[in-house]
Length: 427
Image 1 (cartoon, one colour):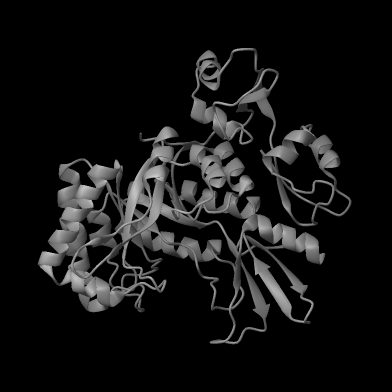
Image 2 (cartoon, helix red, strand yellow):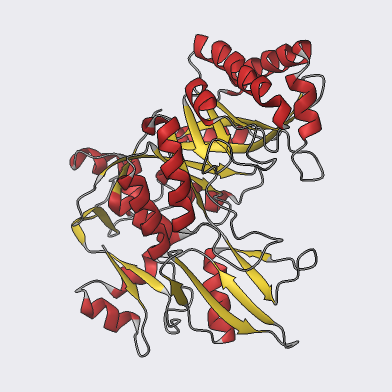
C-alpha cells in the first residue's frame, strides 16, 4: 500500500503510472467523486492486487471464496464496490488479495445510531468485529428506553459482526446526566431492576454483549460506579456475555475534571472484559481550532492506560469526522460545524484550498474564507492520520480500535485498515 499526497499537476493517471497501479482501482477504492479535479494535499490510497478472479457464469462469492480458501467477508473487504454479496455478474473482476502482508489481527468496533444509512452500514460491516448501537436510555427507576435495533442486529450477524447493546446516561436533550447516574448508582433496587432489564433485552434481541457509557459521573460516585460495573459483570459473565466500558481519556490517576474523576482505570479495567478509550474530542464543537484526535495527545493517554489496564483489553478510540472552525475563536460564542472526512476534501476543492498536514498532531487541515469574509480552519482525518493512529495500536500492542462513529462511510480509512491488519471476527 502507498499513501500518495497529491501535488500540483498530479492526475489519477500520473499517480497510477508512478506506482504501476490501476487508475480505475484508485478511483473506485478511494470513491473519488470528481477524479479529474484532485485537491493539492489530499491523500489517495494506492494498492496493487496480488490475485484477481474473473467471475464465470453461475459463480457466487461463496464458491469463489471456497476456491481460494478464503471467506466471503474477506472478499468484501478487498472489493468495497460489492455492497450486496449476492449480486455479482459474469465477467466482473474480483480481487482475492493484495500484495501487502498484514501485520497482525485487530478488533474493530464501530458505533452507529439506529438511523444510519443502510448503504453506509453495509459497506462498513465487513471491516468490523463489533457493531455498537447507540444508545439505550435508562430511567431513574431502572427501566430501559428502547431503540429500533432489530434490523441492525440482523444485518450485523449476517456479516459475522457481533452486535453490542449500549446503555448510557444520555438524555433527550443530548447531554449526559450525572444526576441520572447518581440515582441508579445509589438505589440498589433500581440498579437491580436495570440489570434484569438489560439481561432480558440481550436475550430477546440476540445481542452479543453490552457496552456501558456513563460520562460525567459525580466524583463522589466513583466507587459506586465501579461496583455497578462489577455487578453487571457478575450477571453478564454467568450467561457468556462480554462487558465493554467506555472510559474518558485520562493521562493520570488523579486527573481533575468531572469527565475524568469517577473513571477509575485500574478498577474498571479489571471489572470489564474490554474498555474503549475515548481518545478524541480535543478539537470539539465549542473549542478552539485543533485536531480532533492529535496523536501526541492520544499517546499521553495510552502511556498512562497501559500502566493500569491489560493491553489486550484496550480499544483505542478513533474519530471518523472533523470540524469546520470559524476564526477567531471566542469562548462561549464560537461553535464549529461537524464535517465528514469526505465532505472536508470536497469543501477544500470547492473553496480552492490546499490541504496542509500538522506533523505533531498527525492530522490534515486547511484554511479558507467564506462569502461573508469570515476565516475558517478545517481539521479532519485522512489516510495519513488513520495510518498514524493504527501505528499507535501496533506500537502499544492493544486489542483493537473503536470508531466514533461509522455514520459516514470513509473509504480511505477502511482501505488502510484492511491493508495493514487482519480484522477479527468473533461470531
